[in-house]
Amino acid sequence: MRSLSPDQLRSYLTVVESGSFQAAARRLNLTQPAVSLQIRELESRLGVRLLDREGRQAVPTPAGQTLLTRARRILAEIDSALEAMERHRTGSLGRLRLGSGTSVATHLLPAALKRLRERFPGLEITVSTGTAGEIVRRLLDNDFDLAVVTLPVTEDGLEIEPLRDQPAVAILPADLPGAAGLPERVSPADLARFPLILDQRPSRLGQLTAAWFESGGVQPRPIMELASYAAIRSMVAAGMGASVVTSDLVAEAGAPLIVRPLDPPLVVRLAIARRLGQPADPALTLACQALRDLSGPPGFCRHGL
Image (cartoon, rainbow, N blue to C red; front, side):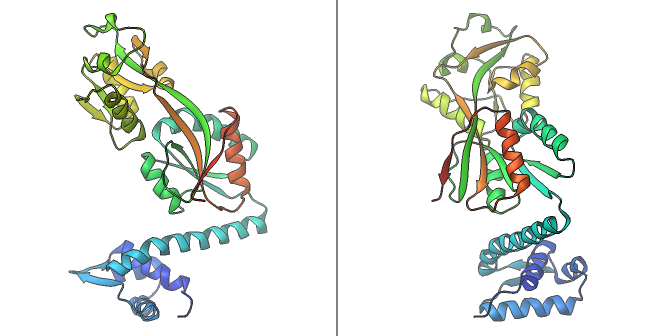
């Protein structure tokens, strides 16, 4: 079997993303027959059918779906190599693509990226947020160069560098009935007596909080499950119920709150994540150092060796 053609892979990926050969041809600035020929040659080279038609839509077959993920990674690596060579040619630092959760993007990244921008104004920085699972998946797919994630991370193929620990606390509005009688350290049973406003379970904090309640033999029944930390703070501050958040979110509630440490303690551990074997890159190295400078001395571990 001859080697794969990047142009054929790009045409295939664009057809899938666009949904049709005609739309892909417009995006690629090619004729529709040229795109069709590239797909036929790719299918002939691989010996499998990659696309089926559903109405006017071109959709991947099971074999095509398998190729799709790999094609994205191959083309991303090719684009990354071209960008790296361009940086060598022009002497620029290039681009940094960073992924994180919303809390990290709100509280940790601004100071780190400000420091980075001040030292290296020519560095292009992009940031995207999502749940921990989404961020890890996109990092593995080469959508990001670097991510700040919440541990544990179980996926193979990553280098994980512990960054900082954030203790979680219980927060309640001061006027919530029964809140004044809380003990100094709050157990799952103590907190479950109140209406609960919790982070959504797909998030890492939501999963850790659910496990914390279950460790005390309590099945939490939240009245609200919200994806926004700002919304959680606002609902608690408005007197709607109690929540579990990391301690860095408490100061922004905007209303008097009762804040209690948890018993047993719940610690959210942040880490820097990179793809295993990722080539050294000046922008990546500088960003990691800026994050370390704001977070204290790191540890280091590897996943997927």
